[in-house]
Image (cartoon, rainbow, N blue to C red; front, top):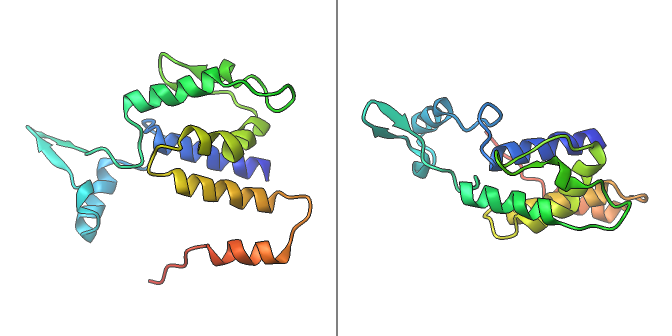
Length: 157
């Protein structure tokens, strides 16, 4: 379960921080969206000879990235709660690196919903945090499992 949380945390951070080479938000994806006539707000614009991608609502601006990293750099937690996350923050490049699996668990469960509470993805992060809280409990309760199963979106093709 810890490794699943680490992978999810990595994917969330790579997406919202728009890390090049790690996100699926590419020009090719935008061209596919244009073909499918979905989300007109994500259409590409032409800047001279180059195609330009508009920022997506779920990615952080450079200032927001800096504020997010600053939040993680300055956070103080109790001994034994997690390692010193501030050692894993590179403020120059606004990147997070070298977190252990337990730190990823702490970030996904507690810090991401708190740090990103002013972003459009806050509700999704809070629900994801609660989902893993229920699944990672020492004792599983059937009514809670049925509740989180009912919240899973079902898409029909």
